Length: 287
Image (cartoon, rainbow, N blue to C red; front, side, top):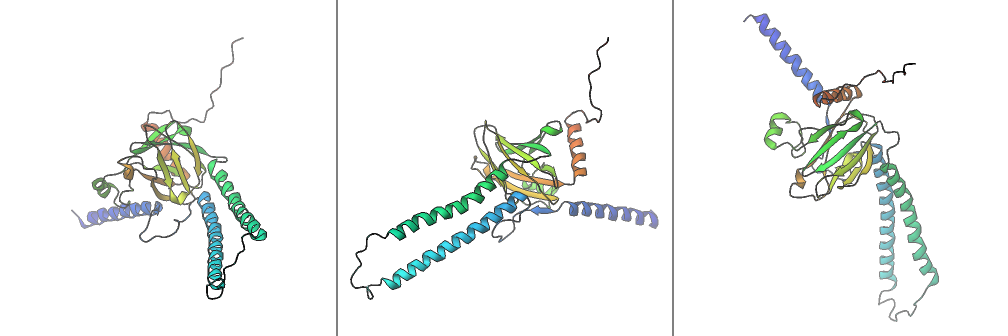
């Protein structure tokens, strides 16, 4: 084999490797737990951003309550010590204090309730969703239906460790799946969830701020809008049986062009008719 031919083959190998590396970089592993991680994961959706905001408000409120209660305890220990008060007080009622410790907690609960209910309603119903994905919890894997794209189905099962090492070594252990749920970036997607069998499951992706309990015979709704492309992971959050810990959730967020191509491939594999831009009309009746 000539030297030029060898160099050509090596050049093609390098280009292919760079292409694979570029593809890997285009789809980074984003939403995955890390060692020694504390607090919430980063917020990848508007819902999770509001969850963090509410958490910060609650942290301020509970910190002020703890400081206030600690101050009262220290004051009581100092002011009413036996050495300072050898004769115990006989006071049994104080109208001002009794009104205060009734009204103030009510006001605190109102301050907490208003943003809490706003967040619940905000995360519950999708506004102007581009399309819907139906999530079904099975024993023990996930099924994703795309009813607005021909209603094809994607079954998502955990990859055994040996298969993960061979097929997807870059994926995290116990979170890698054979088929991810695929959504386009920057798009509002309605998620409706249900389950089959006799067990409830929890479709939970922490970085998305979504935790939907899917129940047989019932539909629950939520939504996501992920800004950045990449792989995101979660797990079933309900104790649904002996394989509960082997129900990972993997979401692949891609560009809209890549998503459209992926949809066409899935529709073709499912034997569904390709989309057409020609509207069907009823032929006029013969006169």
